[in-house]
Length: 555
Image 1 (cartoon, one colour):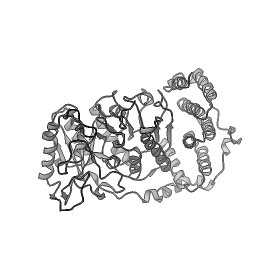
Image 2 (cartoon, helix red, strand yellow):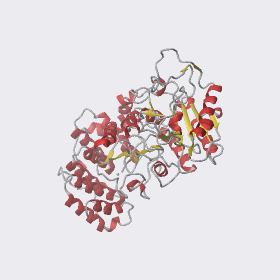
Image 3 (cartoon, helix red, strand yellow):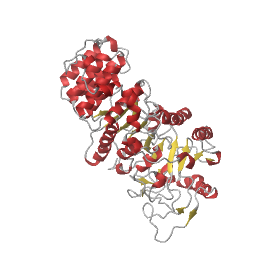
Image 4 (tube, one colour):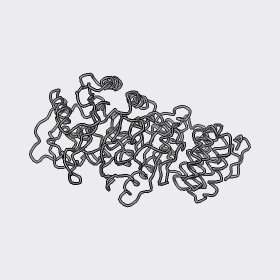
């Protein structure tokens, strides 16, 4: 990208009588800390979470569904049915579901956009009273880059949802335009400016909502703007699943791991690396376990990434590596984005670019660029994740994190989706979800304690619950802090509790990777070769990751 974005990226031992390799004590008596807290953790956990400041400070509620309109393309097979399904799930009245006949292609000309979408939508908003407007007063504060907006008296629609079948690209008309005066754009980003007086065609405009701390209805200088989301993807079944997942996960809570894939870029690209690193810090502070890949390449083929709910990385043109592996699938409700200039230039494909494949792999939400943007004008991951965890909807968080409108960006997924509306870990859940909730709760409850005391408390809870997952999550925290010996010890201890071969293989792969990070390449290779020869792993989907890592290390 220009400074832009042309992106060039043994046997499982019984827990009884096992002595922990670092501390030299029986695992059943591992690190005694706060017995009262551990014994009564389940009794007091809900009080801890519900009284925690992070819960108390959640932004004020806004009934976004009550201010949402839906647009579908009657000429595109399945578009009307998907719109009806979404409206039913979100209880959007039929009079706010609009059919606008337009091109069935992915792209449209500027003339087609004006005639088939922008002008009919503007007329509908005005005729139905969704915007009751008056001319701007003299001297009124300008919106965006000096563009005057009408003063909305009673804006009853603030969110616009485009269904599969509505084009997503506006093709370039100008011949050899100057840099930043390109007239191609995403349909969605153009429609965010629907209520502005004569928004620019050449280039983009500054987004006045960018990085404001207020929710959209209470933000400053956003009169005439819309939050635009798109329910689109490789096929109708994927889109229907995206809708259902968002609604369901809002009730159950989004619990699992975050994955951050760095590319080790610098210079003009350092900004993107910084977004990813700050996102990782945000996840850690919220108690969400993070697996961070620090190599220049994308995560290797078949690399195990269980229960992934958040993925952010860069920088290849098409899906590859771990996320492309046949066995990989995101956890229900996941939000995922791979930053690339043309990540959403193709949306309705299972294999090409990134947007469609991420959705096909189970993500409920992704983001991308339909044409090449400047890096600084793409969605800022760090701002997005901060707002999302504060309780914003996906639509609010995404446009709050996007510096430019009338540009190249799209938000793919239900813009009303609000996975953290109830706060982090608001429900205990069952099975794996309970482990994640307990982990988050312990980190939040003990935020003022020392790092060692927090980890000791989680380790004791893991022993009490016989949960290797809790030890693994704590090891990820140590690895994130570059405390490699500590992470290795925790992973080894988790192995002594593990009964599933897939889990054991993952724990050892993680150990090998941490050994490599710690400068112990020979030990990492030895461990990988032992794993390769072990018959118990022969049928595991993650087996190719052993060869991938060995190859990356030079064999």
